Image 1 (cartoon, one colour):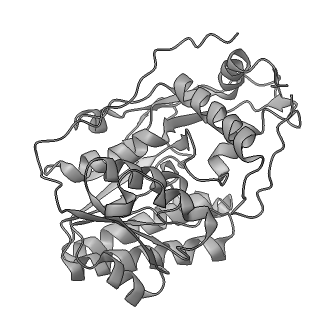
Image 2 (cartoon, one colour; image 1 turned 60 degrees about the vertical axis):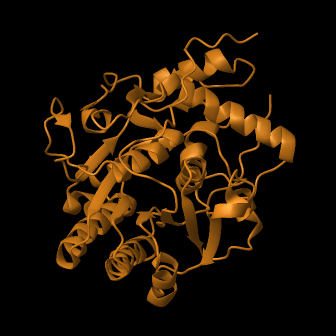
Amino acid sequence: MIVISFTLYLPGLADSSSLSRQGQAICVTGAGGFIASWMVKLLLEKGYTVKGTMRNPDDPKNAHLRELEGAKERLTLCKVDLLDYESLKEAISGCDGVFHTASPVTDDPEQMVEPAVNGTKNVIIAAAEAKVRRVLFTSSIGAVYMDPNRNPDAVVDESCWSDLDFCKNTKNWYCYGKAVAERAAWEVAKEKGVDLVVVNPVLVLGPLLQSTVNASIIHILKYLNGSTKTYANSVQAYVHVRDVALAHILVFETPSASGRYLCAEGVLHRGDVVEILAKFFPEYPIPSKCSDEKNPRAKPYKFTNQKLKDVGMEFTPVKQCLYETLENFLNMVQYFGKFLICRDPIELIIVSK
């Protein structure tokens, strides 16, 4: 019997008095993705009409969106390529807001940088032409944290930016692409007079709505199948996917919201992560040994999420996030038997007791 040592917390979806959602339409780019699916779900639950963009609305991996509560009445899935301005313009037309979440997730510079930057520019320009009230851009901690010159005792906040030269020299093209895309978004938004607000999530975990496994979930699943014998001497910040989606809605609905919002609940050492997982799932071969026992244990970095808390955000504890991530995955494997894998070179991790 597993005893869960945290208080279950479900972020409230209470109605805000600041804006009436009746009849308001939000365009969510990359709507079939991990974070975006949760955005669609919560927006529909709150009464918004949603237009979701994706390359192929008829792809079976997007079927979960049509099953969401309110989808039949208030969800339209649009075939859009972010590099095809006309298709994007048509999807955004008539919308009150845009949640731009679609982005490549790869360390291939050709696949990451240009599509992320040009796609983001197209979204901002189309939003300006459609006269949307506000654009929410899902950036990343990758655009914030990667700076070797920052004092390790300094608090990471919305004023921090990743060092582009450092990202290039270390070939961290994902972080480079996210930073360059965000800078481009700010530049074009200023030029076009678009009200832009940015959310910068850390590593996002939590239950999957879609039947595909993404890179952030693989980060945790690798500890279950016995192939990973040790854990790294490193730290990672985490946040629940529901919280990321809700953060976008909160800042969209807050007229005074502006600038960037760091979206993170807590930072854990990998040793803490495997210890938590081992308590919740003792039947799996979760590693208990660090791969680096010579150097001092890496210390969690300091950050602040106060800006999001100031607009009403309450974060789900990381322990609950880790539990829900694996419990959801294991239940879905049992139900579906397998997962569809949508991104190369990620391969399905076979979980066995």
